[in-house]
Length: 279
Ligand code: HEC
Ligand code: HEC
Image (cartoon, rainbow, N blue to C red; front, side, top):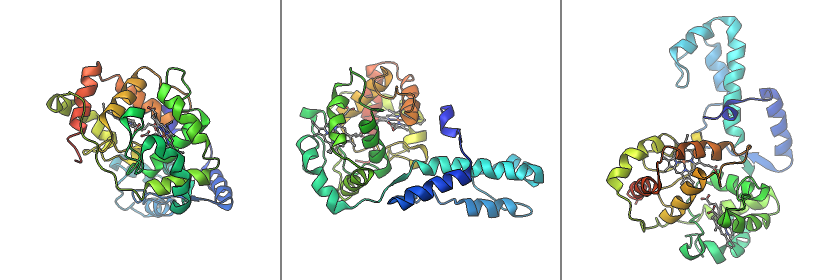
């Protein structure tokens, strides 16, 4: 994990105020079903004497917590971590009907049902996690993704993201994409899934056993995606074409992981295994 992912540069209260302003301007906080821990609940857990069982705290943490002087510090730290994760899920409240109209120009490359198109190197978008799509569109727009001159596909996508003028427009198109049923793309590469199985073990910690994606690690679904697209992304991460920007916290995490894949053969093997999942 990079340092940034656990850095909390403002206090919990400040962040809450900041979010208050966002809510007032029409943004709402999207709390993923997995993000069930609220600061209130944490506060109650920490105040209990002795502390009640908590899934996210180890015994050592609980012992330290009993010492009053550490309690406030710990509470702030946990609230901070929770908030850092959650703040990445702050996004516009999407209107799928408005999003359908906004998706019209996207169909030329991504297809009528966002199924992707190998001829245009455009990936499948249907069924992808909404928080991930939201982040990618923002990153294309702000040049965190697709800015490298070697990124010929990302450079095609950048001006398209700019068509979505506001956070609301991005939220709407993502809401529409979430109404579409994904059809898992079939395998086209010649990797060996047996060799890929062992390589995938590391990937599973973030992307899930069935490559279904995991919001807790901000790792997207891979199972339904086209294999040629997955290969391009792995190559791009490894070559620093994607995930290089200093403020691309999650891209940089993924970039570090590609260093464990020796060469293109290894990439094809792990992708072949991914294609056996969720079919
Ligand atoms: C000119 C063709 C083209 C058009 C039109 C286009 N895209 Fe893309 N899009 C691409 C390509 C190519 C990529 C893959 C970029 C890469 O390889 O990094 C992509 C990638 C994406 C991604 C990233 C997916 C992922 O898994 O990371 C999203 C999200 C996306 N497009 C959404 C849209 C939306 C929404 C629109 C319409 C506003 C749109 N695209 C219009 C070509 C296009
Ligand atoms: C430390 C957690 C972590 C591990 C381990 C990990 N990933 Fe990722 N991966 C991510 C995150 C986070 C992203 C999203 C990056 C972004 O937001 O741009 C990602 C993105 C990707 C993408 C791009 C998907 C898309 O739609 O564009 C691919 C492909 C991928 N990972 C494959 C793998 C493979 C294969 C492995 C195992 C060798 C692996 N990942 C291991 C966290 C991880």
